[in-house]
Image (tube, rainbow, N blue to C red; front, side, top):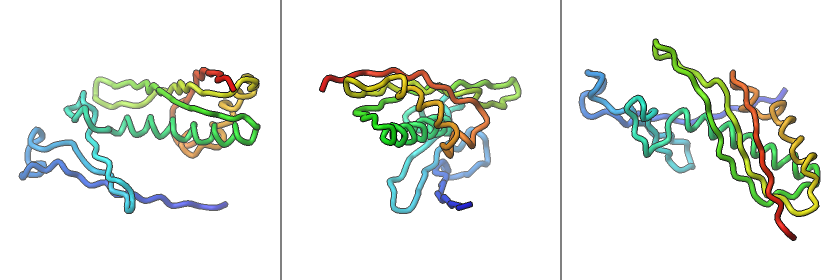
Amino acid sequence: MDTHDYTARVVWTGNRGEGTRSYKRYDRTWNIETPGKPVVACSNDPVLGGDPNLHNPEDLLLTTVSACHMLWYLHFASDAGIAVHGYVDDPLGEAEVERSGKGRFTRAVLRPVITVPEGTDLETADAIHGRIHEVCFIARSVAFPIVYEARYEVAAG
């Protein structure tokens, strides 16, 4: 079995000068600083006082699930001779929060709109989604179900 290592750096940026001396006196912000890549500024969920203009862990998890699915979809479509001309997903993450504050994702719904040329076998194109959960690193790693509700746009030409 081959192994792969992934690294990243998470740097807290929310110290307003007193650190965590008081719960309300620091920001829940940080940067993702992976060498050689653009910095990604983040915050926690706005419901918890985070900055709504920045990505939060829930955004990052949901988009990671979606991106992994998309990349495998494109790979399998290419293998099947299906020419994908466009792929846009508006995924939905469903979560629950207990009274104690503990939360978790209960499922992710991927809702891609996939553009293919006339003559594409849409049944074959749709069947590809069912194979992805067997190979996608992310889908195989999360503890919640991932479902898909794909739509197809057929482009002339």
